[in-house]
Length: 315
Image (cartoon, rainbow, N blue to C red; front, side, top):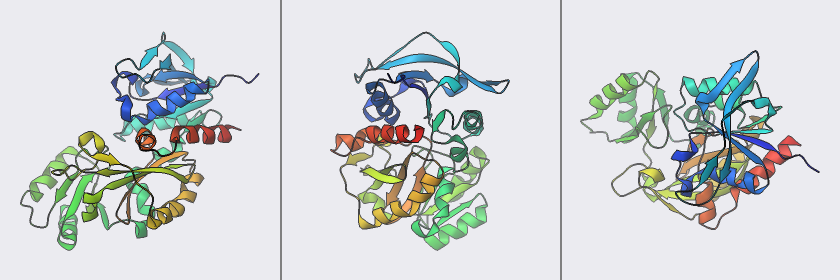
């Protein structure tokens, strides 16, 4: 009889998630359906001592019921090497706390399979990793030099300015060539962030949608289109973007074929990329979302495909 697999889920606390659109919840539900034991913990419960990585975990049972979606058992300190799989799924910001957690989890991987590979998550920041494919991207500048950014805006006209390590549409601004708030915006960014900023050519095609494409082990398995609200430059669904069914274009298939080998090489079993028009804008490797939306609109059961890939990798 096969041994039951133990799955650690490193995430923001399960009590705070919105289950209708949460990919970690979808992954965990599928694991539970396969008979695996789930163990919940948050990143601040990680510890390293004498070369072993510990966490205070709680066994987790999930239900797809709004307002009554989880039960947690009693807290227990465990050596995480006793887990078969760990899902690295807390949301950014991708800060030193996040990076430190990847260093700790790297002590476990690959004997305990961490999804995604923590060393490559650390070494592939989402808005920097994508610059390895410059011919697939819109014109992009990474800098905190005010003069460089001003020159870039003058050349491009409309630009998008955003934090280099932000997520979820936070701090994303659309600035036009004659925007009189531009200097104040750069001052604000300079006060808020020590890192460079990212300035990107504005793509008018975003009004038709920012497509999220999900890839499992380097292969495209599903997509949704996210259309921004009328008065917002951002398409993220939690800030008012609208999800709609979509199909992959020939250009999007080309993009996936180009980046797929790099994803497989780095052990990225689950990735979400963002495509606007004909351009790749981000490669999301930390905690990409979209699983439930793809299935809702009649697409693949991405969570099931992911666990198939995880099981193959463990074998």
